[in-house]
Every structure is written in C-alpha cells, then in structure tokens.
Length: 169
Image (cartoon, rainbow, N blue to C red; front, side, top):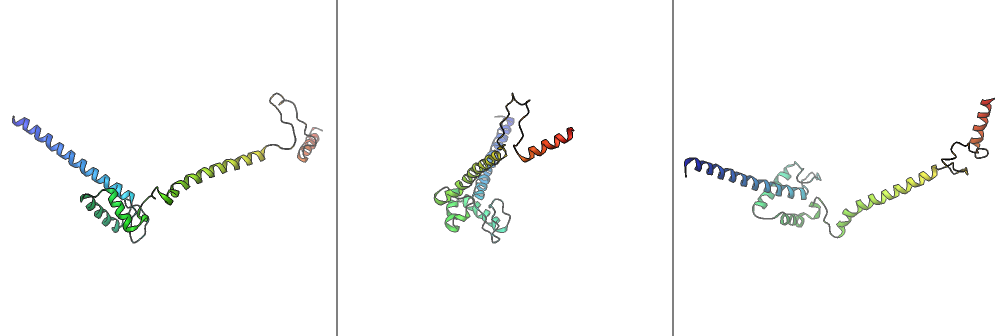
C-alpha cells in the first residue's frame, strides 16, 4: 500500500471509531434519561419533580449512582425494580397499569367522557327552553310573508300592538 492509501484508511478507521464511540455514549445517555424520566426525585425538599427535571444535590447524587449501576451492567428495569423495593411505588413517575393503580389511568378519561355527555345534555335542555312555547303556530318558509296572529298570545304582544296602533294615529 502506498503512503496515501494508508492515510486514507487510517482516517477512515478513526472516523469510524469516533462514530461508534459517540453512538455508544449517546445511547447510554438516552438510557439514563429514560431511567430519570421513570423515577421521581427523593430529595429532602419533597419537591415532587421527576428526577430528570430536579436540580437539587440529591438528584445529582442519584444520577451518579444510576450511571454507575448502568455501567455495572444492570438494566433500566432492574434498577427501577430495585428502587421500588427500596422506596415503594411512590418513587415511580407514573402509576403501574395493574390492579388498583389502573384506576389512575381510567378515571380521568371516564370523567372527561361523563362530563362531555353531561354538558351535551345540559346544553340540550337550555336550547329547548329558548324555543317559543307560547302556542303560536310555527311559520314555514312559504308563509314568512304573512303576518302572524299575535292577539291574545301574551301580554307583551298586546302591549306592542297597542303601541304600534298609537304611533299610526
């Protein structure tokens, strides 16, 4: 091989090595981010934040601990299981989809559905109250040019008719 060919192969191997190394660290960062997203912070402040969003010193220590655990070969599921055994299910950022915790997933959607149906029914009742119910015959499109009989339909109709008659004279 010539000198130039050796340099090209060497550059190609170096670029390939850097690409593989950065992909490995990127996937490790993504795995750690998934783990931090699945667990809550257990700081003394009781901040109630997901570990990924917490900025306290306890969160930093926990992140370092989880990094070491991942480097030692534990999977995300194993670490989560270990944390649940140590701190209880309150460490999880989302409730499990089993047993009684399933209600935390179902209730919000059920409440939205029931609220929507109740709102539809309420609006239907309000619209029905607005419709004229004073015994007057409905005017069709063909009869819209004909005046309607308003005598005796209500006290307001009578008063309006009296006012109009006074204006004409």
